[in-house]
Length: 202
Image (tube, rainbow, N blue to C red; front, side, top):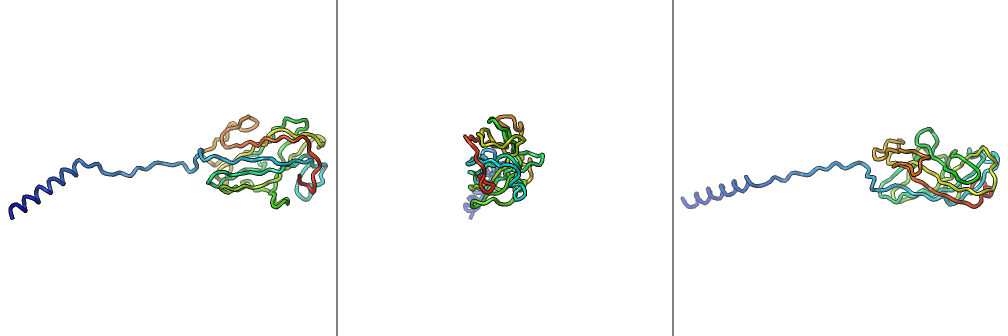
């Protein structure tokens, strides 16, 4: 009986000694930003262009005299994102034109199944791994001639519906600075000619 009690004492002392030197496991908590800039952003391509003579498409679509572009915006990331395609004084899209006839971003609509759709919201969702097509109207004070169109379209994007609320994007410097700051993406284009639009579209 004495030996059994002594074994228990030794066993308890050994355990206590081991516990004194043990390092407690503490969970490591690392703050992760809501949206990592390393995830990347959208890209886009302007596939076609045409001229809008006069106000022939203004009543139906709100397109002013100038030019119309067909644009595909892609989201290669695994996170939903938004592009900001409206002119409202906040992160406005910007055309930088180097060809002979100047023009400025006016308005845009969805383009689905080969047809012009509804006007775009202030924040257009581009789903993860997906793409959207839009048709962009650019107005000009000059004659909308069948001429070349060369330049770039710059548009802001983020992970929030509210423009400018994405904490990862300072959006500075803004266009016309080239390249612009984090939160903008650029779509270059070069068309040798801009023939008349067909049913208001390229």
